[in-house]
Image (cartoon, rainbow, N blue to C red):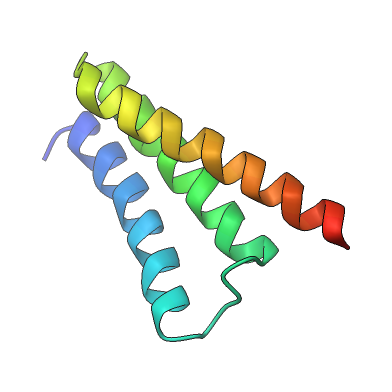
Length: 79
């Protein structure tokens, strides 16, 4: 496994952990941890996609990170 694969796998794994924890109600779907994991994972996966110059996943993961940032800001604004 090369550097790009490791980085991409790490990012996708973080997003999947957030999803798993949310599905099993181990974290709040609008909580800081959920949004933080999504932002971190999507940003890392987007970086890996940039490294391999794969535009569809750059768009997907970049959008995922941005939407998660807006979700985080909305959640923080409620508090």
